[in-house]
Image 1 (cartoon, rainbow, N blue to C red):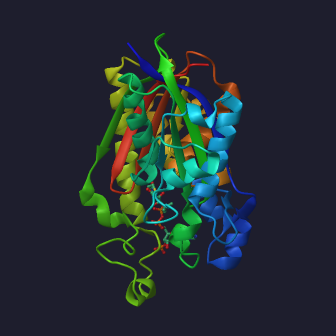
Image 2: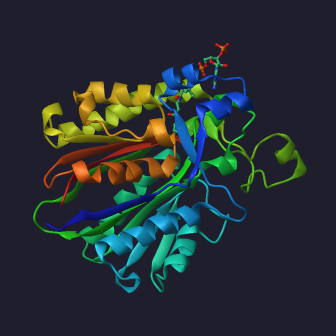
Amino acid sequence: MMKAAITGVHGYVPDYVLTNAELEQMVDTNDEWITSRTGIKERRILKGEGMGSSHMGAKAVAGLLEKTGTKPEEVDLLICATTTPDYVFPCTANLICDMVGIRNVGSFDIQAACSGFVYALTIGTQFIETGKYRRVIVVGADKMSAITDYTDRTTCVLFGDGAGAVLLEPNEDGYGVLDSLIKSDGSGQNHLIQKGGGSRYPPSHETVDNGWHYVYQDGPSVFKFAVKNMADVSAEIMERNGLKGEDVAWLVPHQANKRIIDATANRMGVSFDKVMLNIYKYGNTTAATIPLCLFDYESKLNKGDNLVLAAFGGGFTWGSVYVKWAY
Ligand code: ACO
């Protein structure tokens, strides 16, 4: 049966490094608190007028096209997962295509907060499995610094900017995305939300004064849901594919909090040396965490490795993808 194999991965992070030491100068926090509560040491910030998530997404896609020897005209579809689109419309996927020279194909954004990449990968996979398309690019790109309140110590230490992209191509030898689960529970909406700027509360002096254009997060509530659901969904995908902890070569978790990642690995019976981590250097880059992990660890991956991707985010949304690495 036709599967969608990941045949390349590329990532991009901006140069500017925002360290815990610099945050100590901005808000009442300290390196010890941030490190022990989250696992984050530093994060990247996209500086410069007029640059949005598309800038980073386009860098990741351009690098992906180059390293896989794919011409822009050979791409059939591009999907971008983002919570920080450049504009309300047009979508960021359209902008990325324009920047890298991909024309006349479908491109659209997916909004599933920190689960965005898992959702977009699941969707992209369908177009390959049905035989409709042969080359699909899935991007995760977020400029979280655009919606972060750098006077709020409970959120500003958490987020960073970055992008990652994968190429999906057909595979009939049993490699690729073998299963996926996506879930949501909209009753969690008020625990993790950017309240202003949409159709319910369009931008106004009042929404700006209220700080509604920033991320609001009730950290401890989200933490409880994230620990339970990320672990549950990972256990569920392992169980229905007959995978034991020792069969998993790599857990590729969304990077929101090192403690949530550790709890998920424990529940799956996966040892910590098999868990991909970049939270210490990038923080939570929302839709970019998982493809950036794959990019960072690409040289350590072997053909046939079983990977379990897992994410949890605003919505609430969560999900898991089982991948047999194809190269
Ligand atoms: N520095 C120092 N102290 C701080 C800081 C800080 N940066 N932030 C909060 N504190 C204080 C709090 O004010 C509180 O003080 P108090 O006890 O005097 O009231 C104390 O530290 C403990 O705060 P908590 O919020 O209870 O800390 P917690 O251990 O829950 O950690 C955190 C907070 C890291 C946000 C955690 O709750 C978390 O990781 N939540 C889940 C995040 C997540 O998974 N999000 C989903 C993905 S994101 C997305 O979809 C966009």
